[in-house]
Length: 101
Image 1 (cartoon, rainbow, N blue to C red):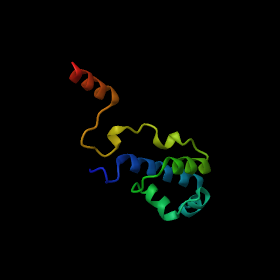
Image 2: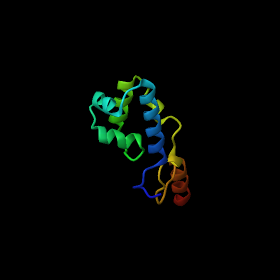
Image 3: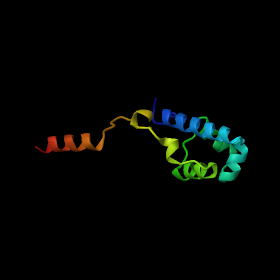
Image 4: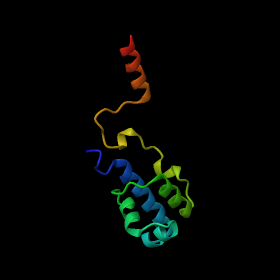
């Protein structure tokens, strides 16, 4: 998976949004309208092929009456596309310190 491919994180967030929307019994069109979004863009997010902004996630969660954190809970670096060099801050600092000596 390249950095431009949809990520597992996007798929999971989309699934969570769809489940919440269906629980509320509203259509994609209605939810997009309430959130001030284009329905096609919302549909992409729900299918896991769109990458919503933080503002969009908070707005969508707000109109559905759910905690925005519930949309991304449990997601981590492993759910994102791999990049050439992916380090945690701790790993980076350890290596930097090792190279300084």
